[in-house]
Length: 411
Image (cartoon, rainbow, N blue to C red):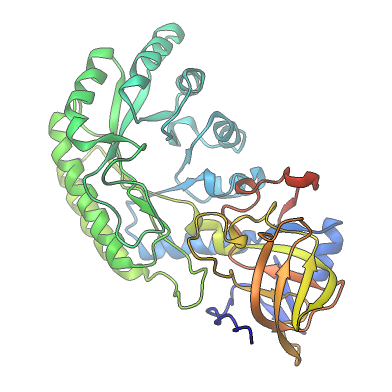
């Protein structure tokens, strides 16, 4: 007999009335009718605002909060976020355009990424944003653009530290990495920046992401600040910005619990107080993406068929891995695990069963839930996948097999 998948932590962020999920105050079936077709992503603006408020309450008031657009670059969402946070981080010229269109001030935009093109660097200088240098190669085109355009090239240095973020879903610092410049080479890089006449402002350090262990994040934040304090001795001017990265995770899988912000508030309060004395001109920044928007999003797809094969129930939906690669397990998982999912218009149904939810693609990889217990679903019902506000639509191969692109709405 096939085993049953373990249960997730209950998803309580979206209210339920008469057995139906509400998103942005709208019943799910009504929202689907308003959108006009399935599948679609729906992001609840009130949940995004609430998450930012919770962070503001738990973390020191002098700390600056930045949004990493790569988590979800939907223009309407970025515009909503722009009014809530202190700045944004972009990873391409395309994301830079989204940030500027959303009304984010250039002084509050930073640009990170290991493969910035010369043209992207020129665009960054022209826009007046902060470029996080990740290679000696970036210095000459930045200097040339500043000279050509007659404006300063604002830069910070992204550091690849000697340590990593323990228990991180993705480790982005420590050991050989394509991100940033090795800590041992920073003094040489700072001299090159000064010789090129670039406008140096500070340091950026991002050691990892998707971590649910507050103690590990707090330890990495402390190590990051200590390292930056050491590197600042070679800085050509007093620091204006210290970006400590983020790493805050959200629970996706059975057994995972929400991140405890209390130890992080304590750790960051201590860092901010020390920085006020050591670097009185510097802003202390944390940069978050998934944590700000991930739990505020749903992926909604309609059941088109119900099949039984060798005793196992398959619900075939009109969406799949081409629109939600992460939920299929093909976006970084070593062993496939289920995202939390449900029949969104049958949340209180009495009949439950173990089902496997598959998409319409001609590949056995197109599985969005495997042997999960949920209400009995029939064609026409709406399957929802929770925790879908980050790394969804733009992180998926939407052109695969010629299906239409997914719709995104902010409600």
